[in-house]
Image (tube, one colour):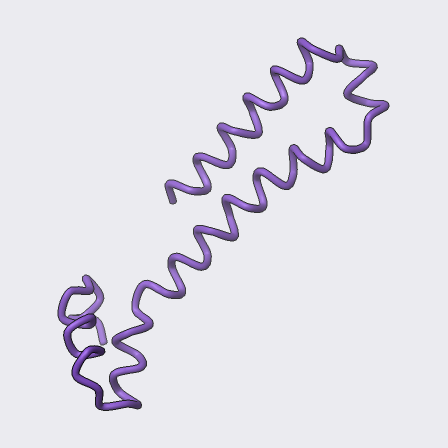
Length: 83
């Protein structure tokens, strides 16, 4: 959740600084500005998605592979009781 929030805040700050620097006409005419604005939001969402997917990955792998270090990693994970 925090990376999405950071991405949205970074995009907002980038938009404000870009508006004050280039003005409305400059923002509309520069295609890179729109790309960077949406890229900041998408990167924040992608990091959050990867974090959610990989959070319980050691516990899922522990069921398939019986390795000692996976047991230790899974014991430290908050999702241990869910799996």
